[in-house]
View 1 (cartoon, rainbow, N blue to C red):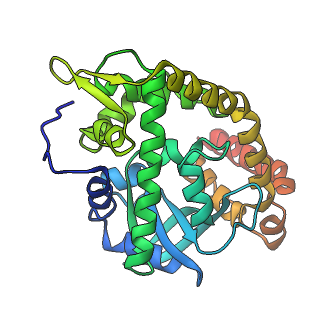
View 2: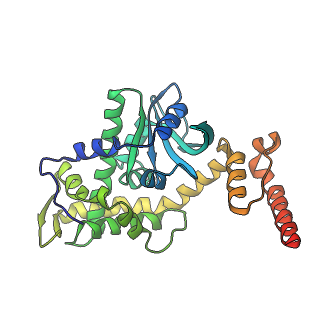
View 3: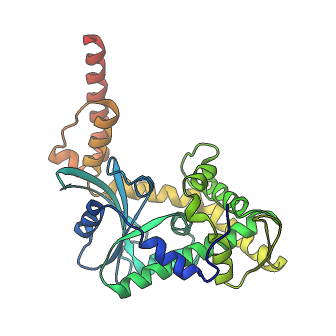
Length: 307
């Protein structure tokens, strides 16, 4: 990665510029529709942010004011809206900005917020400039948390990519999800401009020094005691990562607003078999799942015989 960037740039200015990146008008319109009355801002992230495509499911985080209602967060929902002559679809996570900020700063057991939002995101909607500033500060804290753990996990000296690679390899392994080997490389290659120069800025923002070597190599100046403390901090989160994510999945299976519509869309997209979303299926998506799968299997078998 090249490190030839504006020497006056800071982590704060980098994050603000990144959050203010242009996104499609339809995305901004959708984000505004999704914002409840207590919303402070809506972050847009994921592969659609990178590609600009409106196909598939868009990913949003809605950040609200006030205390966090749920002990296991965020609250997940699925939405469809006709915008610009097409039906757009979105998976939406909702949580309080205060909890988001605390998680981004690494003060909670959660690893998903800082690991997710050190990656690219855009502020698709904000209530006002003050709310936008608070959200940018929280995202900057995610970058700081991720950077200091990356340095603790990475080599004594290496390129920024070496440290980010060590970070993402560790965080994916700690979460309860299946990722292809080398997922960390695909993140870095797909978001090269975003990560270019980010690590030094995030280290400088929290007073972690480093010496520059040949090319883009750096040698972080982290005291052994600080590194040991960070590794102990990470070990606890690593140990609890999978159980915590299982709890979230179990919660989502019963509280995912619009789960039946989301599942029906996914099934039809991948199998070509339409699934009717009845009121009962809408209320009881988990109980309805066996019947839906039986229906899809029969339709696929009938299609095979007709062919």
